[in-house]
Image (cartoon, rainbow, N blue to C red; front, side):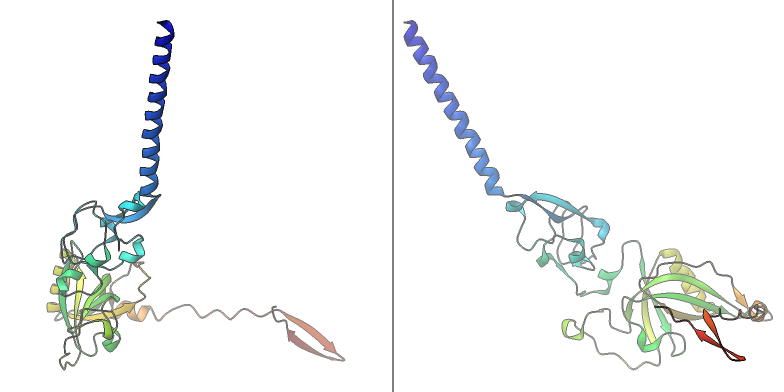
Length: 267
């Protein structure tokens, strides 16, 4: 009887080991089928259809390759400047067929928290035909009060141009739909401004003259500037005399009674 019990226990242990082996083998195959984990862009918050997709609403998630959907964007650069074509839920993968770089409505290009403000400029008030959607500009305002001195001040710095005349796309003409541009002596531009700056610009436009200054898109530095009037404009001309240019290194060669300076050129 004892031998039978030992044999039975041995058979049970073998069956148990076989079942464990089959379970672990199945899990290994399941993990292998899923593939290694890779990074993919997912929404960090809800993105409504028609809205621009800011970098702050995206994050890199890590999923098994099996679960990454075809056409999913995997790098932040791939999602730069895109607009959602459909609602994107929080945690959802960013798919190429759900976003576009062509805006059908100007409102889609307005960053959240900003306002699109139209500014009418005559031919002398802007960079003219050089302005394009996507450019970064500064706004200068000149005021002239009756009986008082006139003055100019930098009103707002680092402002993005959303549209120029009736075009709000900065892509190539072959890739975008352009509306016919009406004849105009200057430019009608649309700027992305915070609500407080929208009020400031509207006031300045009604009370003075606005000039748009184009700046390098990579230059985000804001300068601390003083208001310029007739008095300090003249004082600015009273500058120190220009310093003489530094002399280049030279070697003096004397031939007989005469000397000659030979400039040493750097290698």
